[in-house]
Image 1: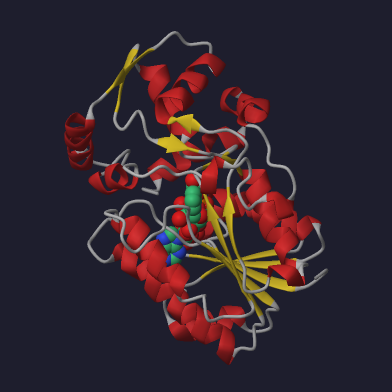
Image 2: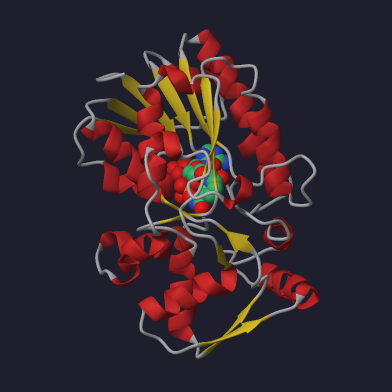
Length: 315
Ligand SMILES: NC(=O)c1ccc[n+]([C@@H]2O[C@H](COP(=O)([O-])OP(=O)(O)OC[C@H]3O[C@@H](n4cnc5c(N)ncnc54)[C@H](OP(=O)(O)O)[C@@H]3O)[C@@H](O)[C@H]2O)c1
């Protein structure tokens, strides 16, 4: 699929900010609907990208933004609820409206972002709702679903958040320090989406996306500290202390660092089947090693500021 019209919901976020320019560079015309056009300033100057402010939860507005599109990519997701029902609205109700609108507007290709660990039986409501949203795409022969482990890269809110915390204090208490992840590079995730648009063998498929390395959370934080050349003491918290740490963090005003829902999600390893490097990502090429790109944490420049912008925006 070259030079087509593609709508990217959630295209102004972390993953979208890597994917949208890649799609434009491949000759596609990209439309990015957003709740706040100002937040997508970084996309404005790029040729072939249209950023428009609208409420995509309104079926009429959603239908309008999908008019004339050949494909739609859904990246909308939240890690924390501001009020009960937010997960359901973003992860389940919106995908249902999207599928309906695609049928009405003859949008023949759908790519949906789920998450590794999205399971109906999870204790985490993030993962439950992601699972319910993902299930809606099972009956869609023209859909492809992606399930990444935690995603790292310039602008992330995972390692960059730990980098910010490590800069602040010599001792860092760490909840769920033993939780295991297989982090995947944002560039690999963006490439998987962009490649899938052009490949018919991805129709009706679901792909887990993982990087080549498997780490505990403590190892990831230590790696971050080493990259920043900081000598820090990581204080692993036990399960009960982790729960209460998360509870305490929920009470903190402003952007959330951690919630009990995150704690519940981390009770299950976030790794690809049998811990295989790249999991099912191999159809999209060899995954990038964290160690080869982690230098982005020390880079100056606008991307480095994403974490601050996003925290400020409460995302
Ligand atoms: N980052 C990770 O480590 C990771 C791992 C696994 C899966 N995922 C999934 O990947 C997707 C993208 O993640 P990301 O890290 O790029 O997230 P992000 O930076 O927070 O961006 C999410 C985007 O979703 C949109 N959005 C959020 N809530 C919305 C709502 N209620 N209504 C409409 N739009 C809403 C936002 O658009 P506007 O603010 O512009 O309107 C934002 O641009 C999500 O579905 C996430 O669950 C992420």
